[in-house]
Length: 361
Image (cartoon, rainbow, N blue to C red):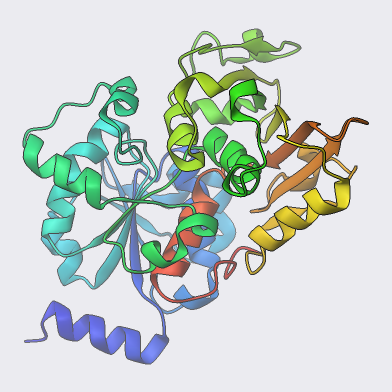
């Protein structure tokens, strides 16, 4: 009888790929994950498994994927995690609610699988930042160990740690747009932190998830623009931890745009001393050298949502005031791709030793 380990070894040796599974394939991010994994050049002989609440087919849950294959692809009810391991699955993506991921991840890791979790369950190191999710752990000691072990899944910042991680916490969409914009400048010691940083961010409606609410259905969102979660958005803690900012240094206000997808974050800050545009641009280009999914615009050119929608790029641009100190940064990404499913595939690529951009360009 062939063991799961022997299946894994044989599969990897013959295809160069890994077998993956997606839990929570019915949502927007889950659907994008399915599409990307089915088209990924490394996974053509190791078809992903799709997992949902009940037995159905992928095209029933995601009709836009109906023609992606000649055969109907099954969605199976949640199995025992050991069954996935025996079937050759090595990496599982969790596109599930925060509470569900928090409960399942210890079990999945115990079964010997590696996890890329798209929820906020494992992103935050500080308990005070994590409190926004109101998570409850059956085993608090084990959860604390996994909090410490989890790697924040931003390949541009933590490539080497992701490579060897068992648990990768995929970043939030707003957080990704702000972190990628601010980290190079703050890391270089160029930002006047005491002056404060203001981030005005706007997202398409898909960022709120697939389940409709009173504020996301058409009659509210269409022809409208609204601010929400002022002084309390759950992605704020990610920015503080990953950029290295005190809580009172950042004011982040998200807004709901009447478009399906895309995020534009406009960030206002002051530099410690006068700089010219060429020097600032060089800071960004050096920081993101070797990371092709972040595109740095020429000084004075600003990104737009239409440039990044349905791509896995994060576009960064800036403008300096005449005094050389006041700066406006603009960061754009697709919240379902670079802000969710695409970045999750990036993390898989890094975990497998492949290029970050494989299957995403």
